[in-house]
Image 1 (cartoon, rainbow, N blue to C red):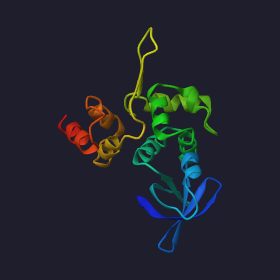
Image 2 (cartoon, one colour):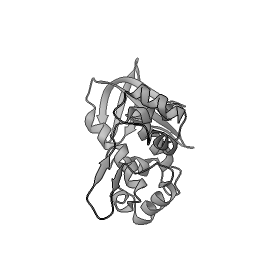
Image 3 (cartoon, rainbow, N blue to C red):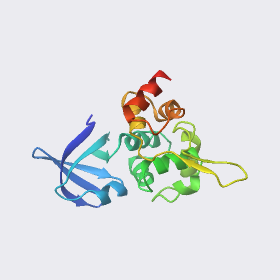
Length: 191
């Protein structure tokens, strides 16, 4: 299994990039957001999912570990293959997609290319309790909203230590977000 690739962007085409790793080019399919951000000649690191089928092998790349973990959850849903999961992740940042699933927003998921209403509803039903708490909380009867940071390094650190997205989110729920990442992780681990 290829867990990640670090190299220079050699080419970009049709939602894929070729990452040159010491003279070996790896073709990596990426979400639209990652495709738009990278430039030719730039050094990048993509966490990868190595998809092996009878007739082919494909690499799917993600700029964050959280996006890779969400992708892996999405492909467990019946009817959602790697290309559909990548289309869902192309809707926005991984945290935005995760939040839509946590909030049971199947309408948002249907905006993905090739994802119909039934598949979107299945994604929400199967994953809403596995992706963690929503990051946007609305107080009934008012317009009060509280948002947590979208790129949470402490969340990614806990996931790298083996926590799933749901458990990592719960562990960080009571930890103040203004503390340094290392301190937040330590506090979350002590629970």
